[in-house]
Length: 363
Ligand SMILES: *[C@@H]1O[C@H](CO)[C@@H](O)[C@H](O)[C@H]1NC(C)=O
Ligand SMILES: *[C@@H]1O[C@H](CO)[C@@H](O)[C@H](O)[C@H]1NC(C)=O
Ligand SMILES: *[C@@H]1O[C@H](CO)[C@@H](O)[C@H](O)[C@H]1NC(C)=O
Ligand SMILES: *[C@@H]1O[C@H](CO)[C@@H](O)[C@H](O)[C@H]1NC(C)=O
Ligand SMILES: *[C@@H]1O[C@H](CO)[C@@H](O)[C@H](O)[C@H]1NC(C)=O
Image 1 (cartoon, protein in one colour):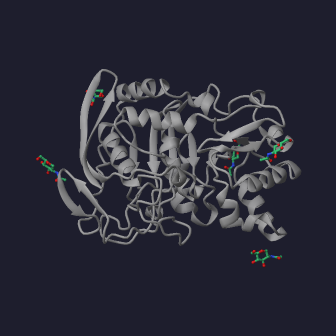
Image 2 (tube, rainbow, N blue to C red; image 1 turned 90 degrees about the vertical axis):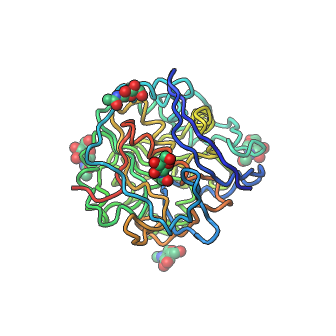
Image 3 (cartoon, protein in one colour; image 1 turned 90 degrees about the horizontal axis):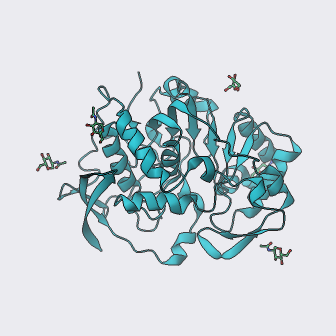
């Protein structure tokens, strides 16, 4: 059903209405939560099917794609440090990225049972392999950075020339183990924190079933250069064999990286924060998760590769991912994410100086 939804965001004592949009409100059956974790990907990306997909802006209905999304004003963007501090404080009421970024060794012992976060009836046993890879302390303990980049995987990055600018940030967060080497000019190489959904192992690395696939995977991981590999291993059942395979490989090859596995409360806490601000996101994308976490330890957050539209502002088609041919519908009722709603929220935060979204070429 289509319904008007007034969104307002509450920040500290100040309340401001920042959007009045209509979205298709979809009420998920619980079974739908367990859908492919493909959808957890950060990339605000993909070819949308536009015939039935409509987004209301300012009360006037527009078929997205007919009227093109406008470029963001970025020339005179300035960080609002007061607002950044307020948002950090607000988010800290819901989660502390320093703790929630990963479970740690002392939380579990081998043989412990974990209930999957989005499918509580199913369980996972903590193996010796998994346990030995749990960090002793949070990988973000006492971290503080002047500027951070959160890099989504939208095709909008292609021909952006943003690689240098991205690599210039103090801390670079990347999503879903996206390829870098072939796209360095547009996406950069520096990686301090890289997420990886278990589904990538099957989809991109053939389940690590033969030596060729394993070598390709090891080569990609070597690009992490001792940084953090963040694996959401406790979301839904299905990826546990892959996670175990990855963990075994990391141990066997002594790969130079640090593993992290998000806490069992992270996703609920992030959702809670946005819900309280009237942003009703059933399941935040990895990109939104990363932004939310980054507020804890970054003074300035720059987002790249976030673009949930099939075309750019000039009407040129934009790939869902910069690196493959995957196609998703941004406005589909089937997926768990609300990419366009997330994007609208981020755009508002951009205009207030809380974060910087880059959706066009870099200089
Ligand atoms: C939204 O409404 C305001 C005030 O009525 C108007 O100035 C603005 O152009 C509208 N924006 C859009 C995207 O329609
Ligand atoms: C920064 O944000 C705060 C809180 O929203 C606001 O009161 C202040 O006017 C903003 N400052 C600038 C320079 O925009
Ligand atoms: C976990 O371990 C218990 C006992 O060791 C076993 O009965 C159960 O089947 C295991 N569960 C899974 C999901 O492997
Ligand atoms: C490994 O598997 C991939 C895909 O499953 C296949 O294309 C490739 O030929 C295999 N390589 C070897 C050496 O078996
Ligand atoms: C790898 O990490 C080291 C130490 O942090 C750094 O000096 C080096 O530039 C990094 N290499 C790459 C390719 O990112």
